[in-house]
Image (cartoon, rainbow, N blue to C red):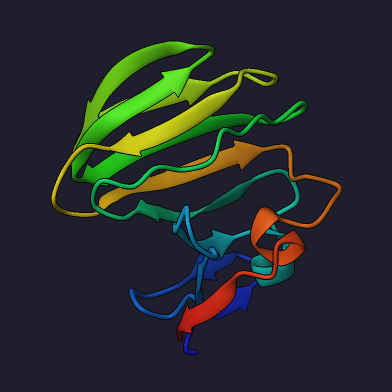
Length: 137
């Protein structure tokens, strides 16, 4: 990995972050790009998330974290607090803390997004707690 960590920031190039995939039946992929362990970030976590064609994420809720999604490809729906919203490349979604949320991919391509949430959780990330398989880098 040629990502460089130093006191003035963090640079990571495409393909340098490990990718983890959830077990069946609700397959999803996540790559963490910024967090305390990777680069010393103290307040936020950022990464990439992907839902396969015609797949969906499991319903989720973060009691203390706020989250932002920026969709980079695909199209589908974001369910926030029981309300459905259409999402596609260029859509931004803000999820306040304690709001249940889920993604549904309605397309034939991956639904991909960049996410940021803060503050960092005080428990293991879902891919660690559920032993997701490392599938890249």
